[in-house]
Image 1 (cartoon, one colour):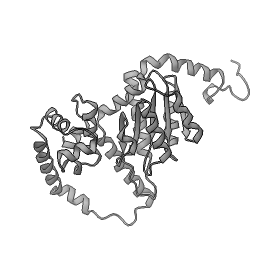
Image 2 (spheres, one colour; image 1 turned 120 degrees about the horizontal axis):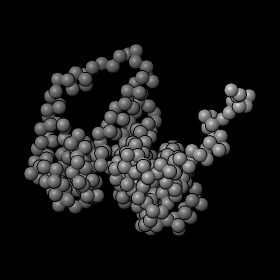
Image 3 (cartoon, one colour; image 1 turned 30 degrees about the horizontal axis):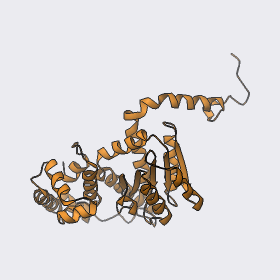
Image 4 (tube, helix red, strand yellow; image 1 turned 120 degrees about the vertical axis):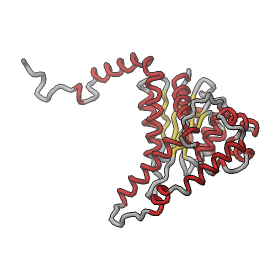
Length: 294
């Protein structure tokens, strides 16, 4: 496996600070690992000794050893015939813009898959399922729709889900009822919204843990978030893609099901009973002519 894959899929138990270093390395790989240990520490918001301890924990002799191996891997990839062929392969002139877009989103999806440590999804699911108070979700102009989708999933598994949607001045009053027992889930992608950042910052100052979904450039909220999940959002389009953000959100749900889902089975069964009683979905409706006789 490559160093990037090893970082993304490490089974080593990581502290919160160490996880931030891994994320910083993967967010701008490999450039983030080619500077000094101090620069990496500053980027991750941790101390220099934490970087050194992590490298030892990952099996390197130190940061210098990690950097030497990273440089060797980068050099090997630059001289790979296959990579050179792919880089110089001319794009077909008959390729439609739509197909080029799909290809770019596919690349961003793969980058998202390999840039976030697998342990991060478990940590996100644990934060959500073990929160004893409210789970409040907010997002930006477009990403608020992903927040609403996530809320729709979560409400089937636990109570206390609150979808704020698009923030208004009145919504800031919600801060008075939030504290350490609650969780704020924020979706914030470039261009980052000042009201979303402000709401998250004030919630954090009140002791509310923040779970952030953002892009690889990292929303300012990442500075104080309990956990940040970055998605690659580049696409051959005037707009960044949020397909990767949706996939990452759904991956958290997928990760949570085997770990926490069994305890929510009774709740889901009761929700289905309510839906059936009220003919919410087509599968609960009778034929137009009424019941058929046998």
